[in-house]
Length: 599
Ligand SMILES: Cc1ncc(C[n+]2csc(CCOP(=O)(O)OP(=O)(O)O)c2C)c(N)n1
Ligand SMILES: [Mg+2]
Image 1 (cartoon, protein in one colour):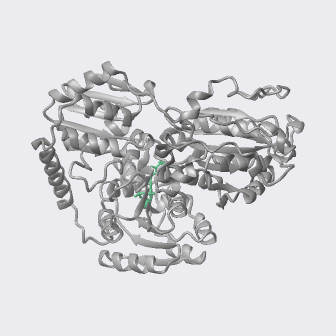
Image 2: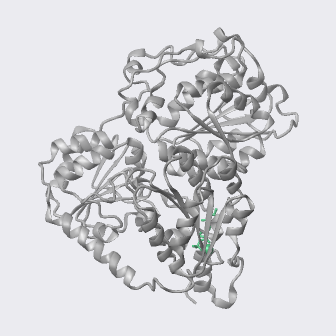
Image 3: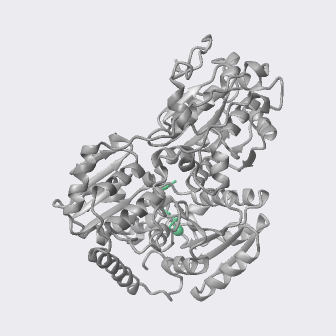
């Protein structure tokens, strides 16, 4: 017998869950309505929200006196400042799509639900807002699993509005009826079914509260078809006010004093800024603290751009500097395989770890000092506790060491080789795109060669498979499209392995239909290169299986959809091809024949 996890009682009259809570906590801090203003000011919603007054619930804004459930969903989203909804249509979610028309929420529909979910995640990375997606019951929900799981691993706030068969047709084999609650329970922070049309606004509010509380993450709200289709009297619909706090916990005074002591004693401290900095909106606090204490900063994975690469204290890409450090301040960094499970810091190195989620403290490497708290707040308090020591010679040394390391690495590469080297492709792209562009990275070797090259000046400038621990190939094109949708005036480049491009290549159609002219640069080695190299290493050149693809003409594929295609074989032709691709004003593909695996 299947179980429906975490549903509430359908007969429950549904007392408003915030009614019993002191309003005062929320009045000062609620974020309702702040998002649109913050976004307009070019700021992340998370940052601005804590100082904005909430917009009062305005039922009069509802267009209909007798709204259906989808109109209530859209109205609740609008009150959160949501401007985009990513989807692939289906009968179960039609009311939601209809409601978006009333509320002026732009609907961006993709060709596969995996891409829909990746788009929702990228929207969050780039705007700081909750990415909202809606997918249909059954196969729509299963298709979206990969994208939602990736967002979950990355700790990205997202709302998944899932279609489901009608409650009245539960368990009788209705179309597309599967147990989605169990499926989504393990890849979301919170998952619930809404059983009453009147309560939709409340459930959406709860969903936002959970997505944004503590360490953010995706949340799942299941909306059965009959609940969405039903109409209610306008006055019966509930939209809570002041339903989430945006103030965040400060670290304990004692832990901060201890951390400050360790940093003060260190000769070669390094800060590693992870994704937690991005979600705490700690950019300004990080810059101030690093300058105050004169500590070099490595931005890591989802933390890229939280200190601009152009800042004198930025030592990206810098594992060498971190290895020489005698104290490391980890800010919102998961000590996972990407961090060598913490073993990359030798034993005498003092490790100070800050994270808003206490259960991440001590993961794999026991820290010498652990602070549970919001990173921006902790940095402010640390700054107060530490004497000003700008201009440490160590910061300069670290930067020089990193520059030397990068130079030495490059000297080993034949940049002029034919077929092209992926590093050459990445460097040509960097030199062409500059610091104002947004870069999305996808692929195996392609990612390894481009992640240390492409510049990040702001959060979201460099994102993709390198943003987190899941190593989810295929994020590239959907991420790039969401980035373009959020920033129509910015140049958006995707650098992508040929294998990875194929996973969501059909989204070039989405690019054309929605006028999202991104430039996809394909490092085409005719193979799942990273796996092919491993196969050769483990079993020998004569035992290749399932790792070769051949040099597919992806440029012609993109032309076939109505985009612009370039085919490049010589390294000197990469730059002019990029120029023509961008100038075309169309979604474009620069298909560069490369070699990633030594002959
Ligand atoms: C969705 C998914 N499928 C499979 C893998 C395993 N995998 C890791 S790297 C890699 C090869 C990637 O090939 P490509 O995108 O062409 O990049 P290249 O290594 O050739 O630069 C594969 C298949 C993965 N990480 N994610
Ligand atoms: Mg490849």
